[in-house]
Length: 327
Ligand SMILES: [Zn+2]
Ligand SMILES: [Zn+2]
Image 1: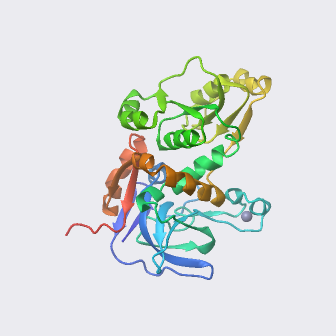
Image 2: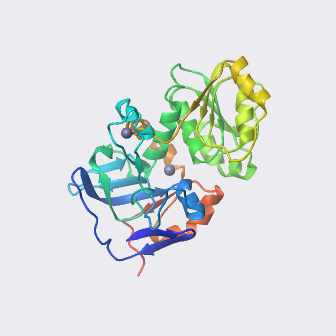
Image 3: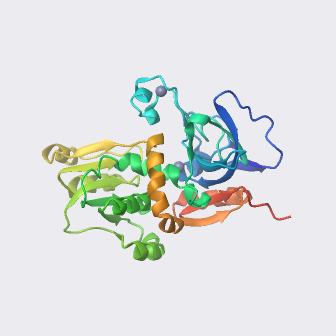
């Protein structure tokens, strides 16, 4: 079966086998074990995208299996390997990149054709559902790789959604103290179990402490301004989530980047190397990652879940393609 995005607001399950999944040289057909639903998928459902052509099978956070029963996560890019960015191992910036679930059909299907070069083996001990986090954790690794070069700093994390929580876990893993700022009190309440278990703090605001870094994991312009104000001189800000379009920022705030010699670094998607690094971290934090799974569901449930995912109120939903639909 597969889930096809036919138009805006139209994600339709199809039971018939895909007509022809072509395996060109360098590409292989894989069985999809599971694929997580990302908020980006829900946004595509709501708004489409400039470069998206319908129909399309979404999904870029998947775990696949080959005929020899080997499991892989998939770096969701198909890059040219020739441009200056590919040669610098920054394939996420490739001039001619194609993205899985977006420019070509993705993992919301029981079968997928992916570039062989994008496959990353899953460690035997790691549960497939947890392994679905490899792509979002890879994005976090890509965003924070250059921040955790020294031990024992304190990092502000704006946004208590899945990405913010993953960033907090990753910070802890590196011996840093994460402080999450989340404006939605109900969301904080729902996270109590995770926060108590991990010892990560999360509140509506932070006072007093010194921070040597911040990461923006929400689209709120206010958070951007606060990060510039709160981070200490010489500190780093990872500009991870894009900000809502069409808003304006006071130049006084931007001048603080200058006065405080802040390093403001953009981060977009993930490199394959960052996903490989993510798997090490994930193997050691699988219990905590499990706590970020909202539910494991049958792919047939996906269409009804999308509007809720768009609201940002839920953690990760995982579509499990090994679950058979009820007769
Ligand atoms: Zn994603
Ligand atoms: Zn390239």
